[in-house]
Amino acid sequence: MASTTRGRPRSFDRKAALDQAVLLFWSQGYEATSISDLTKALGIGPASLYAAFGDKKALFDEVVDAYGDRYGGYMDRALAQEPTAKQSLARLLHEAAEEHTRDGRPRGCMLLCAGENANSVEVTEQLRQIRAGNVAVFEQRIRVDVQAGILPQDTDVAALALYIGSVLQGMSQSARDGASREDLEKVAALAMNGWP
Image (cartoon, rainbow, N blue to C red):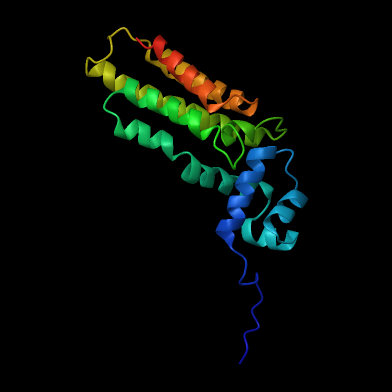
């Protein structure tokens, strides 16, 4: 007996569709990306989009997670694999120079780019909290080195973490504005001159 259950066609590849949504929100931002843009890029109708992902904000939430998993891993690796905060954060900045200018995808960091001109307070706050969380992770890593005596006891841990976060965000915007990988590598190297 044939099944009477209806659903998305078997050809629908949810992961591929999510990848396309990441690139669309990254290049256009949350506000400028319409449901029409999404259905066109994903190759599905509005009903299928809502069935697969929910509304635009629910899809964006998945996009943020997917972006972190697929494109943000360099940050976690740098923090986990290097022996000191200085080496970790220097590596992070240098890898950001490469990641923010990689061919074949939008420039800069999606967590900054997607929030440009967002009229959604919820989206703006969501992305702000993620960026603040990154700075908190930097602060924690720096604090470990202060406690271990690698950095001076009078190091302003919060300011140093915010400094690295600010440089990272500036590099993203510069990449968006056309800075090359080489330009950003120089910025990363200069930034570390401010390390205590």
